[in-house]
Length: 414
Image 1: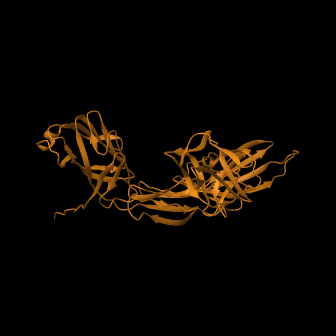
Image 2: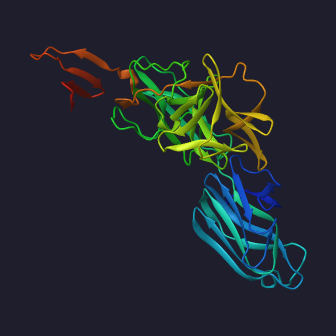
Image 3: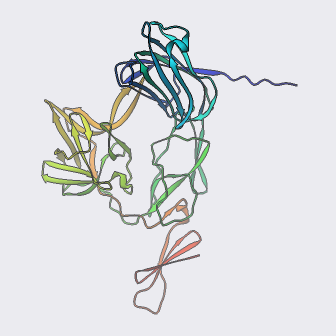
């Protein structure tokens, strides 16, 4: 008995709009991001010019074919085309337009540059370089096999917390934030399961997470007794997090492409630590503490240069802003941008007219964790132990281990 497996192929089409933009003409997979650039204009490449289309967050799909619709001059036009997937060259095509289509033409014709299946594609690039004037790109047509959505299983200690499944492949899931316990602060999620470690593990913070396979993540907690995480009301130069108290997000990282990132507020995440230097009560400079990168602005873009930020304060409410022309722009954490047929949120400058009731705050960083665990339910037992010394030792029990602290010395015992 012969069983035939029917594979349904899907198509996404990207049409050149201008020298920096392509627009989708078909439904595109959720999460896919397109970037396009041409060194000359729109889709035209002369000898020595180059046009590059890059697709990212393809989610491991199989790409089955790539066609480019383009035309030449009436009697000339040549170039080289290279397709790379995940950084590996998968197809090349070079020659004259006539050798590709049979004749030079000022009307667009289909040129096939990839006609094989390339599996598990996360990033795809199509580069067209002109070698003789001129080639004119109209659109890219990419055939692919869609894949089932992926599932992320979330564990909180020994208990199943939740199972999250993408709506469609590559869309990702939103990781939740969990509540703290008395002594343990929730940090994020880890692909590794452990009882206790004393070096900070790799952590995924509660924000969009894009799995590349079905996977289990464990909640990670840091031991931090007695931290005061209240908001700052007395503005003094120092290290703080810049947070939105309504949705508990915080500025994160350094400027890139005129924007910055934000993430779930985590007073133990060093990427969210900034040094605020107050030159006066109403003027401050901001520096990313870990990298010593200044956080400034150029027009309405965030850039890595020192810039004087104006300060607005009303009790806990603390906002940083500047003027661009005659308009006021606040440093905001969830600016909405419409790009490439989709939308995204980022940290940047947002036009505003009123600071009344702003949710922006400054929060002190937490003390560094002494230990990390996926099992806060085991507790942390701290008690005095009788000993014939003036200073009794302490025992910190973490899973199957004991951390003994005596006269400033630490000893780990199984």
